Image 1: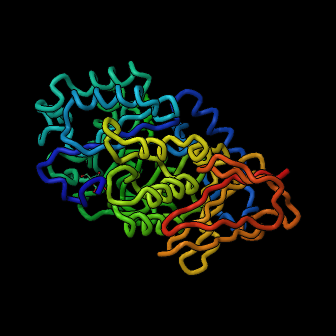
Image 2 (image 1 turned 135 degrees about the vertical axis):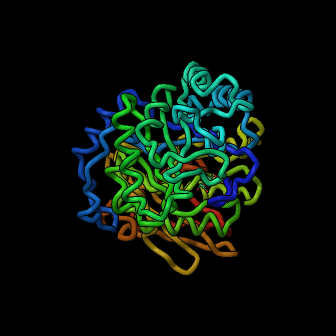
Amino acid sequence: MAFSSPGGCALVLRFALFLFLLSNAGGAAATAAAASRRIPSRVGYKFTAQSQRNLLENGLGATPPMGVGMKWVLELQLEMVTADAMVSTGLAAIGYKYINLDDCWAELNRDSKGNLVPKASTFPSGIQALADYVHSKGLKLGIYSDAGTQTCSKTMPGSLGYEEQDAKTFASWGIDYLKYDNCYNTGTSPKERYPKMSKALLNSGRPIFFSLCEWGQEDPATWAASVGNSWRTTGDIADNWDSMTSRADQNDQWASYARPGGWNDPDMLEVGNGGMTTEEYRSHFSIWAVAKAPLLIGCDIRSMDNVTFELLSNKEVIAVNQDELGAQGKKVKTDGDLEVWAGPLSDNKVATVLWNRGSSTAKITAYWSDIGLKPTAVVNARDLWAHSTQLSLTGQLSADVDSHACKMYVLTPQ
Ligand code: GLA
């Protein structure tokens, strides 16, 4: 799995390295523009009144964050080498911009003034030096804390009661993103604890993307849009088919709440970690993309193979995820193990995934009524994995899809 369960990080120092597409520059303007748009309900499902919510004031997250997360022993040198790899692999150039620390980056105790202290054995020159290095590469740095007394690993303090102080510390170091976990939380509601850090970040003087990680416990999609830029809707993902599909389904329930500025987060990508087949990983990436999930790569990009790179760097799939309309695609049709997922894109395009969750090859058909196209629509269907286009389709789109595989399309009305 990408990370331990709550409390399970133990003595192993783990962290994630996340690169996100959205840079701060232009974020406020983009978000303001997005705020003035209304998402059309033309794709076979309705948006709720609750989903017409205010955008968070920090101006970040106009498109879902993209990232690369890795799990290895936390060391400054590895962090820097990975930042280098982001650039040398080309991932940075296709939009992966943020590097995020996860749990275990700090000493167990605060200093005499109550400040968090970077772990001397792993960050001898401090976090600000790392931020400077990451920024020098054109990337951004994220950090991790917890809305409780300790983080899940129990190896460092949480920020409960220290929200203002920690937010100022993060801003002073040049942090661009905060993942905020939910362990050791004294039993109070996330609805009480997370807004405190949200406000502290907004007061910190630096735009900091705020990622809520309360594992979907109190249905954050219904309240977190004014608090953060993304919110986990699930427990931690593991590198296997059942875990991945269940996260996809849990996250899907909240599709109508996703908007530019605030995204449902079914946890990071396991693509490349070895526990699923290539076709399962292709499905994983496609579904996360159409569902406007954060694209947080969970494998070690320094040693990923070509297949993994090809999956993670498919620009056409990423473009669906990053489409400016920001409407989460969802499961619109189920026939046993055969599913159609779809969502609207800008310029009246429609993203569609035909997903075979069964054990043998099967034909899957999406009718225009399933995916929100007018019955008379004539479309060109771009296959985002085959990189080929079928011209002038009417009424339906069909394909034979292998077991656990998917086909992913963008349909463009003529
Ligand atoms: C929790 C979170 C994970 C990870 C670990 C770290 O389990 O859900 O994403 O941050 O804590 O300890």
